[in-house]
Image 1: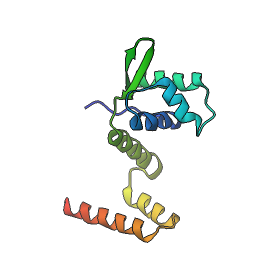
Image 2 (image 1 turned 90 degrees about the horizontal axis):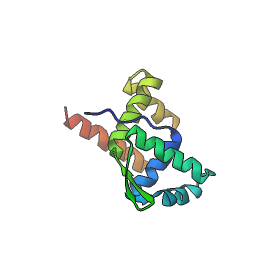
Image 3 (image 1 turned 60 degrees about the horizontal axis):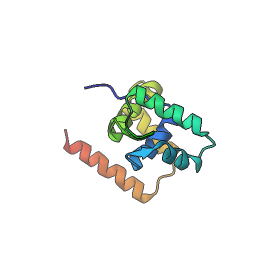
Length: 126
């Protein structure tokens, strides 16, 4: 299986737009990102082209326009990014990472229930 491409923070923002709007054009991506960034159209098009070269996006040409779609599944990119983070920051050790987040965040009852359910599911997969 081909390794998932590594994305910059800016590329993650573009990817989120494309996942929500498969087959979107560059102008749609520019408009969606204009609501939360100050990036120019040229910046967004540069990011789109870079992501096509990395294999994160695919495209189809329609006349003079390009329609972009994800070439990598969201769960695959999230897994690769979280694995890289875990390795880089916590030397690959999951317990210290989980302990850090549990101790450094205020967690509501619903969140704690979700975490407990995830632990129960993990125990069931052993």
